[in-house]
Structures are given as structure tokens and as C-alpha cells.
Image 1 (spheres, protein in one colour):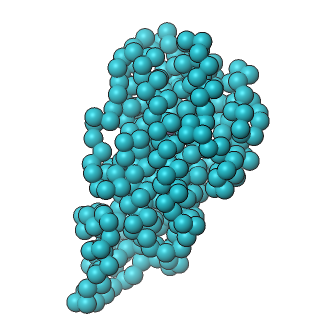
Image 2 (tube, helix red, strand yellow):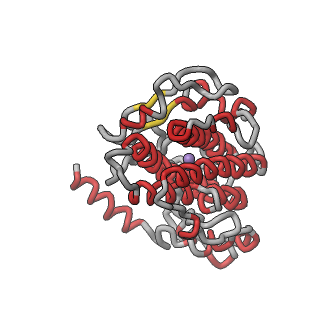
Length: 310
Ligand code: MN
Ligand code: MN
């Protein structure tokens, strides 16, 4: 089962401006072929379907723990998309009135790439790619063969690295939110590719980690990756559990070292989860009926319910 924590895995900077086309670009990292829905779906169903779990504990634990991280990546990218569609944080928050809807307040929205993201989802994220094509279950591979599954996962993480680099290269430094998402996920994707390579090495003896980094751009070349490298994120895997999944130390650890292009050090499994960062408030827009045209009464009801809960 899963435990939910009301945080993002990392702190995201608020956008400097509303940019729904950048939000659409980031959707590729959510619902694209190699996006977070795909990594989550693959590892989650592989872990559910895993045969001989007890006897293959380190491999099962690795896939199961990374599943939890991927669910957090789905949450992180979704927040990034919604933040870019929402615009800068507003001190004090919500508008308290419906505004003038007679003068086409959303005229610009008919010209954005993924107009449905506004018309149907009010700028929220959904599991689609950058062209609003649905993510679907065909992206999930769970063969029952541990080596084939791990090899698929290795390919998936390398493909995800391509996605993230290309999306990063499509965002200017005005899109700080999107760049931060890409930078963090490039570091974590590198960890996952490395972990699946080591898992395959333990089984087959083939030093698959020598393929890395693929594509061949070191994390050190990407400014947004630097602070994560400095804190050692490239050497860490989390169990995402109070006391389970520590058997993956047999694969990630035991004297295995960081990749040669990255800051040196031993790989380590951290029990539990990262500190994480805050979830930004998305502003209510009454004229878009989010949460409603005149939300004051709802705010008042919620406030009374909150006080009752104290
Ligand atoms: Mn991921
Ligand atoms: Mn991953």
C-alpha cells in the first residue's frame, strides 16, 4: 500500500509569468512515451506481478521502491504543468469576485497549443503528452521475465533522459519552473538508469553501467542539476517506506560508486523519503469557474470545517 505525504519531492520555484505553451511542453514528461506515467505504470505493475518475490527480494525491492518515487514524479511534473498554466504565486491568493466575463477575458487561451488543457482542465495537468494525446496502457511492459523487465526499464530511463533534455532545451530561462523540473528529474533518471544497470549486472555479469550516460551529456553540463549533484542526490536511492525495501542495498550500495562523470562517492540507500518541498497554491479564477463563480461561501464553509478539526 501507499502512504501519502502532502509535499513535492523537491522545492519548485514559482513561474515568472503564465506560460501555457511551456506547460504543454512539460506535459511530454508526464504523458509522453517515456514520461512519468510510463515509468510509474511499468514499475508499479511489474512490482505487483513480480514472481518469486521472496527469493528475488533485492530485485523486487528495487522496482517497488522506485515505483513510489515515480508516483512522486507524476505529482511533481503535474504541479509544474499547473504552475506554468497558473502563473506567478499571488500573495494573499484568490480573487473573491467573478470578474467581467463579457469582454473575452480568456481570448488568449484559444491560441494556446493545448487549448483543451484550459477548456476542459482549467490549466490542470492530465495524463497526456505535449500534443494532448492520451497516455495509455500500451506503454506498460510487464513480461514476467525479470531480465527482460529490467532491460526495458533501463531503456525507459535512457529514453526519459532524451525527453527531459529536449524539453529542457525548448525552455528559456524565463521558464524557471519547467527547467527545475527537468534538472531534478535528469538527476533522478540517471540514478534509476544506473540502478537498473547494476541490477542487470548482478544477474548477468554484463557491466551495463558503462553505457551511461545515454544520451551522452553529463549532468555537470546542466546548471539546474548542480545543487542536486552537490547534495549527493545522484548517489541516493530512497526506500520510500518506514521499514520495507531495504534489501535493495544489495544492488545499490555494497561499494558501488557514482558514475565517472558525476561527483565521486559511494552509492547509498536512504531509509524513508526525501525532505521535499512545498506545494504551491494554485489561484482560484472565478471567471473560469475555478473553484466557482462566487466562491466566498465555499471559503467560509471550509474555514468553519477547518476550525472544527482543530
Ligand atoms: Mn521519473
Ligand atoms: Mn525514473
